[in-house]
Length: 231
Image 1 (cartoon, helix red, strand yellow):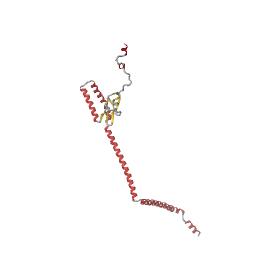
Image 2: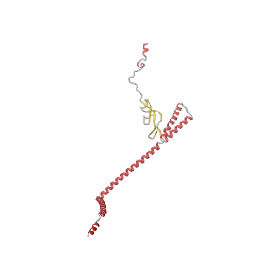
Image 3: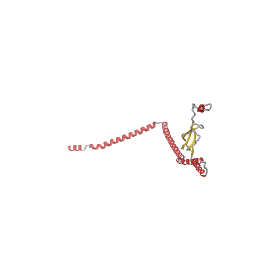
Image 4: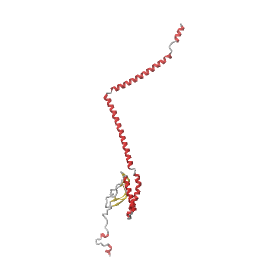
């Protein structure tokens, strides 16, 4: 009898055998809880979407459409502005590409003009002078072909943007600050000044003082000076 009792006691349940089963039960409970949470979240989203009326969904879609359309218009405007800027820069480069060359050529043209003025002052004539005159005229023609034109000077009001005054002279025949002489020609290319014209500008002539004393001869009504009176 005692042996049977001891055998039964030895064959009782082992505590270690229950641990895996309990762990599996807990893992299953966690996975089930996560699945239930995800299902509840999806159900809540579906319910929220279902609550939106068709008009509200349409209004939201229109707002998104308008926003995308505004972005597209801004991008298109920026692209158009970029295209215009590039085209303008290309046109300016094409227009003003002769500017450095013109500045280098103008001193040579000035020397030709000075030679012609010297020949005219000396009243010289001949084939050499005529040849120099033809070369100077050809220079002017080439510059004009590239859009480089002389700046108007003589008789024009002084303009500091295109004229460089090197002297002022009194003149009763001109309004003050009028160009009365051109010392060196100026040129322009479009709206840019290649070289300002060096000019002489008129100024108002000084007036005689009202209180100027008359001369001795003018003060003698008889036309005799004091020495003759003493004699």
